[in-house]
Length: 437
Image (cartoon, rainbow, N blue to C red; front, side):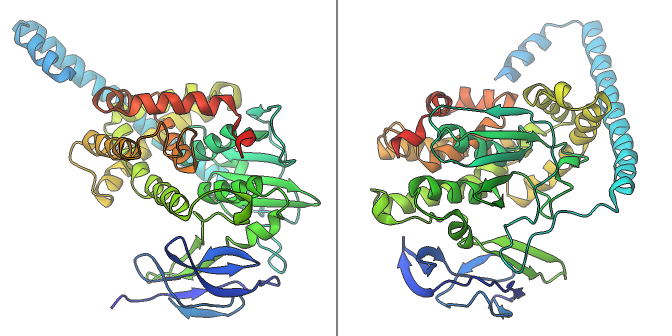
């Protein structure tokens, strides 16, 4: 029997009508007239339950390698010795750089913590709705402002992101495809100065000015689900949509407090507004979950496989994110060298945790092949048919995070992912998705 942890639900002054229902092959509820899933927490994962609960209750349990070999075969002894010395020297330089970055990062990080320890994040009005901010976030220079002539949403959107974070890329792919106007605040991934105002410290975060409210939407999948629900049903109230994605806080068995956002893959709109079958919605949701639970975990062990590859990856991030224009020189070098050192170490743990193969490229190829096999089975250009759906955008967003890395170049050579990826890049770049709803 699974051992359960204690689950605490924050009371809400806006509890909607909750009744059991079956939708999309999973246990669900109607919340404020919209469809949402019911779940409880056990020690290891979220499990769906037929138990219906009130949101106001206090708690319940719940290859170039072959070529290199041939070349080495014809090298002289002196040339081989010289090459070996170069390799050793190169490794020493990388380790020195990473070590210096780690030391500098620790010192600057401590200094930054001391400088900001008395600053409080902006409060969420818990007596009303947790996602509503009591005041607007402080102003930061925008890295970019994306504008199109097809945006009919009427929303003022600001995206807080890391340019090459796969989850941020996923949110950006959605915003771009559907032609939503938005501004980008690039967050320093080490100092995180641009997120000091928020209780929620991860990215991406979207802040939306909606009517007279300032709404904070956390988590890439919730951003996609909530905003698509709004686009699909423009007459819907964004606040009511956000009510369907409550944050559940619970104390884990190790005593730490954790949080989980419910229903993140569910779309909350009037079914009469969108002509889609139940099977289509369920399949899309399944692939979106796969992108988060499987595909994304193949990236880090590939792009941070060795110290030198980790460093090269962060140097590409520096270019892709336009860091020279956004951060000071010392901040850039801190992120590049300290970030490379940290992510190289983290990638080793992630490789073991997510059962990545000894050669992580094989796991990446397997994931790409799994996706293209699904496309071939469906017999369409995209998983959404002749136009991308949210599953296409999720997978494209995740893979675009490593587009400039050697790992993705290898995936293009060794799998059939390239054709679909290029078609997606073209579709997203047109920013016309809103016109097709």
